Image 1 (cartoon, rainbow, N blue to C red):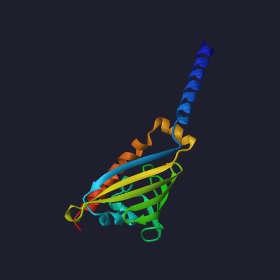
Image 2 (cartoon, rainbow, N blue to C red):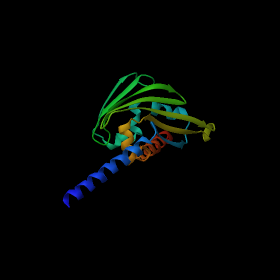
Image 3 (cartoon, one colour):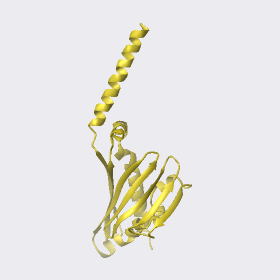
Image 4 (cartoon, one colour):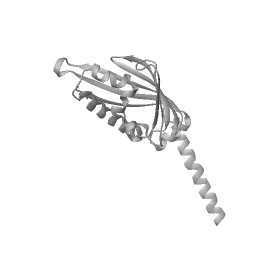
Amino acid sequence: MLKTALISLAGLVVVAIAIVLVLAATKPDTFQVQRSIAINAPPDRIYPLLADFRAWSAWSPWEKKDPAMKRSFSGAESGVGARYAWDGDKNVGRGSMEIVEAAPAKVALKLDFVAPFEAHNDAVFILQPRGQGATASTHVTWTMTGPTPFLGKIIHVFMDMDRMVGGDFEAGLAAMKAAAERPA
């Protein structure tokens, strides 16, 4: 009786693992998280918040998650070649970013996570001006993309990357909006 129960339990475990592996195999090879916001400011008020990592403290959602996080800046002061590394608690992990493209309409980053897991992603901010003068606004889109290796696909069976990171993007964009719209 006990032997039969153990065999049945082992069979269920094997079937459950097989189902997870099959579901993981159907997941895409890349992921994308994207959020947008309208900011009542021209791009030249927003660009400095993106192109200078020291300005990220005004809006980055991760800066607030671990105020004791260790930060280091290197490379260019801002724009292409500017680098930022962080080492924080489990909420922010450890990694680095480098600006690889910087123009008034686009800032692109190479984003490397070391902990809690290794990942190499790209992040892009697109700034699209709308209107002119006192009614000028900017549509800002923040996109992160990256590869999803098979282990990542298994994790994605249980966790949705968009739900996991999307809220942080929304909070960051809202804080960016507040910083950019603040009177000079």
